Image (cartoon, rainbow, N blue to C red; front, side, top):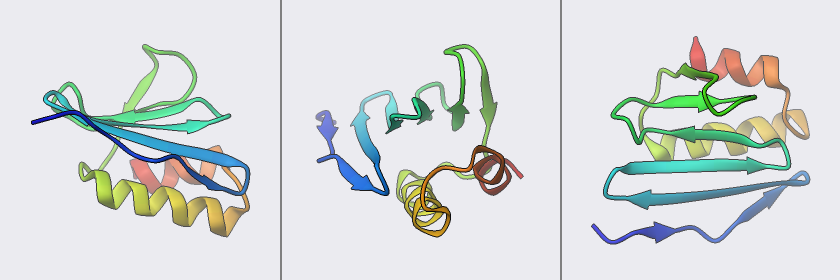
Length: 89
């Protein structure tokens, strides 16, 4: 598989970018520095530090991308507590 990058999407002052590679995919939300990826075979979210991550229930890039964009539109930005509830529980 050839690496594929997205064109950055800007919503409510947040920039969402994603990338697919042979290892999996990753998504980053700036300026919040939130990263979601499945490069290790399971999907997880990095909220604060590189090694501080939590597994999430969904594994599809498209489904998570949709959840993130919906969350940003509904909340007019990122609400970390709500986002964790949506992705982790």
